[in-house]
Image 1 (cartoon, rainbow, N blue to C red):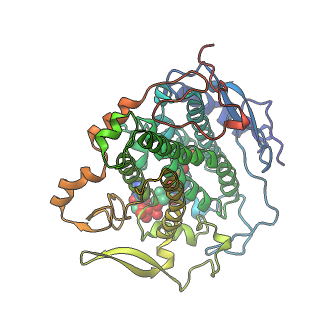
Image 2 (cartoon, protein in one colour):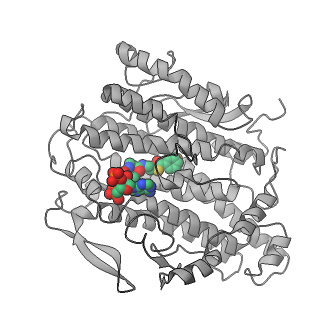
Image 3 (cartoon, rainbow, N blue to C red):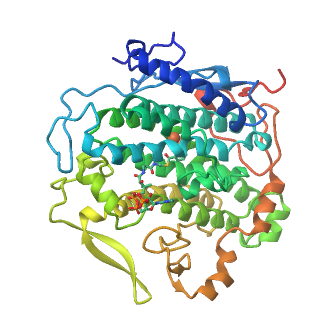
Length: 479
Ligand code: BYC
Ligand code: FE
Ligand code: FE
């Protein structure tokens, strides 16, 4: 079952060779994908050998192989986690029924929409990160962004497989459109807001992979519960790759924090808020990092949709999209009579209000996301504390800077205090990066290609990829 066929054009463990129609359809999509990759994938590095991992199986141990690959030759495969025998639906109206191997007709449109939205984010992130190679702070980091990019490409393949196999002609059309929309394009933007923002510098990249890839994790976890088994199995395997993306983000920011603190300490700076002095030393000040957290976190919260959502309740009822770790939750898994506390604003205050749990599925997933993020913040703050500074980074209120849901029509400070429009306009640059901040970040970005060397503003990682030594040549630049 877990054997992967690597002899065919499209590596897969779904028996593609036995389904000639599907195989031909995907083989027609393949050159369009490669065209897209060459024009919208990593700019300027397509001919270089990169030390990448490729998924060669789906077993928990040993699913990846490391080796030098030119990115356009990466073996993007269609890999589903092994089928669980006798798996039954864990939640919703169809709880207890055997999982579906085909799309139930009544849910076809809803399912297609979920798959398309998921699929759209994958190439979008590659487009957003397309120029980062030019300013990579080391070969280690350069390799990491390319690894993330090829895997997001594989995630696109994962969704395109589902569209082609299960959604007929409209699925094929949706698959084509996934290569037509462009991140940030005015006329044909990507579907969700965060995926049309820019990722111009490496702090942005580390924040994106910390927060936005973590939304990916939460959404994939919910889809991995799906009663539609092919979707559940696809997303389950995607999650194994997602871990590395979030690792790159969390440790990336941590290395920046560590470096800044070490340099501040080494130069006798007592006050981390002395931005001019810290920047004068060529490292990123902590208040700017806080502003970047505020931005990436709030934009990512928007990806959870409205707190109270009939779309989400329909998907849950239909047994298509569950909750985070659905099977470990102790309740009826149908949410007949239960409530869930949802943060709302009432008379100028933030209050928690019990809502029917079935309507609050998005809000709950968002809570689980926030819990996850808090653990990440703790590791960053530890790096600050280890250096003897009292400064702490924090997550802003969920009401801060929101464009979707309950708080989209109010303004709030990071501490949750609601503000009049004029106050918000006046103060927003205290909390969100302004042009000067972004230009400062860009001014630090310089490409470092000597193996084992790192740009001044970031500390080296604690360990190499796949146990490689510090001066390993992750990308063969000189070749
Ligand atoms: N931007 O009931 P509502 C990843 C629309 S990231 C624009 O509140 P729902 C990755 C919504 O479409 C994970 N529009 O929301 C990370 C709806 O429109 P219609 C991606 C938005 O449907 C890094 C209306 O507002 N996967 O994998 O419950 C790198 C009201 O909708 C937004 C998924 O998201 C927005 N932010 O929830 C690479 C999973 N939010 O239908 C990859 C699939 C809402 O009224 N998607 N709208 O015209 C879903 O589960 C849900 O569609 C959403 C929204 C969670 C996105
Ligand atoms: Fe992904
Ligand atoms: Fe990812």
